[in-house]
Image 1 (cartoon, rainbow, N blue to C red):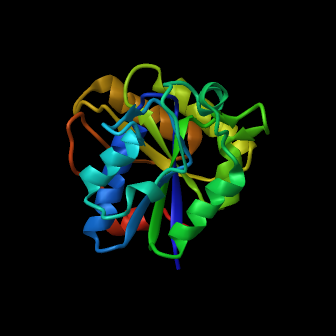
Image 2 (tube, rainbow, N blue to C red; image 1 turned 45 degrees about the vertical axis):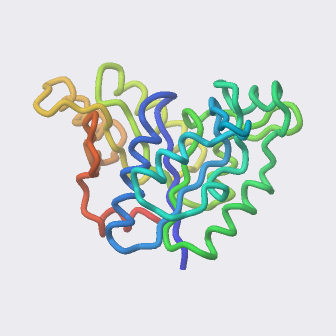
Length: 227
């Protein structure tokens, strides 16, 4: 039976996609049939034929080694590097929940573990004009728990706790935290871990340094986060 996990972050540019690539790679290395999915992706470039290429999906595919077709990874791809709700206003093709769930449902029929990644932070609006659609609506529709990616450095206590409190208020399950941009031995980052764990009750499950190509977490522990 297919299982899923939703990767959210404390904000834009905390490295969700980078870490997601390592997560999918780890799953792949356990022998699991792993897939990647992102409802909406902004800030993409065009190929020589003018087709928009989902850059985040390309990164995950390349670093993880999965053979999943790129066209199944993201139903909404935008060129403008803004929130999806604004990108669709500028470019057309607004995000529709039913289409997002159709693509996700197809992957569930083919893969053991699906790692779904959000756009920006947990409050990112996916559509606003045609319908009011937030990232949390997609998470609820998928009926899967979340894993939070956070920067290990200055300011992360505030970002992590606010993100967690919002998720808790909305009834969204969070399985833990992964710290990105880590510097081993850094006193502040270690204190950030202690304080984030104390203030949220969540565990920091892994630490990722810039340039890492492996996620330091047991494969079976990782698979246990998926539901």
